Length: 460
Ligand code: ARG
Image 1 (cartoon, rainbow, N blue to C red):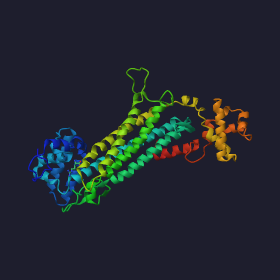
Image 2 (image 1 turned 120 degrees about the vertical axis):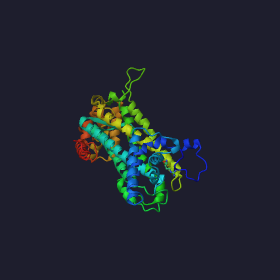
Image 3 (image 1 turned 180 degrees about the vertical axis):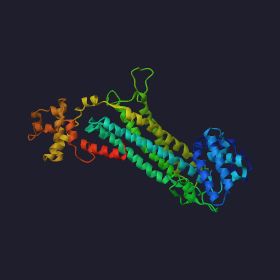
Image 4 (image 1 turned 180 degrees about the horizontal axis):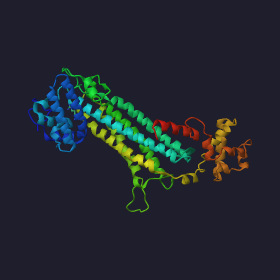
């Protein structure tokens, strides 16, 4: 079949090797619903502007909607000679309507068409990702109730640092996910702009109404420069950046919970429905979902790199390189959504192991900072208190006892003015109670934050 893009200027048909090299139908068929929606809106606008007769528009709309149903059923054979989804749909329309079908492409080019399809597709997918992020936030928030009162060690440099409430920890993830949602919403604004009617690069001499098309497609604005329209893929890169940050968060979380599920940590028990076994070691319950989350998100980071390099050397305006934006774009959305869909039940169903955690809570001198702050509030300069508590920790370590286990004589050996009354600030729950600042792990502050989030994300 002759390609729609080969005008009378060509003397030869396309070499089959080029057809194979340049086709995108094998991946951009995913845009068929958006392509048809864009075409119906475009045709309706053409009709309103007197560029199509009423009966012509009605026939085009009827056939396009039927073509959509045929593609839904998988009944349109895709062929590389027709390159991409835009030409498959238009050719099918022409096969059905003849000259009337040949009018659809009036005052548009595939350059503004593909940008329209992509924007419509991304807009939908962003909304789906946002819904999943919200569900994951809710899963973490629900955990705050389940794990109420549990104290866990927080780490810096992967070394035990200070005790915090498990709920405080879960809310850290809720915060990260909220930033992801904010980025997504912001990015959506720039996605939600209508390029249709920009045509190839300069606009058109035909009397179209781009604002009407934009309204029909529920875009929030109309892109104002046809050269920019033809070249712009910022919105693709930006969406994948948003997905990359989500991936970074998911991957860090997965790594953490893989560690926490080890015998060495034993902090959590992962739901068996999301673990796999070993074919040779019968005792194994492997955290494959989390490992694959860590592994698959690597591809999203790579996709962002691919897109950045793809556009960095392109002069204005449309260049065929841009066709290569779709595989990394689709893959990023697919991957992040698949990871989020599994993260939600894992966060909901994982069981924290408070007994294992509390059995080791007095190890690692988690209360040292609280003790130091206790001395500061009695008037000791911070640097002095820091040094003296360090010396107390050294003595305790040498005897393998906790700070509470120090004798009066040992305490006095560090500083004559100290005595065992400093014990009041020791122990992990004392430390947690002693926090005061906004954003700290103090139980009252954490309860306030839980309330705030319950309001914000409407947990019943
Ligand atoms: N398949 C093409 C793409 O994804 C559609 C636009 C083609 N435009 C062109 N001038 N050849 O970029």
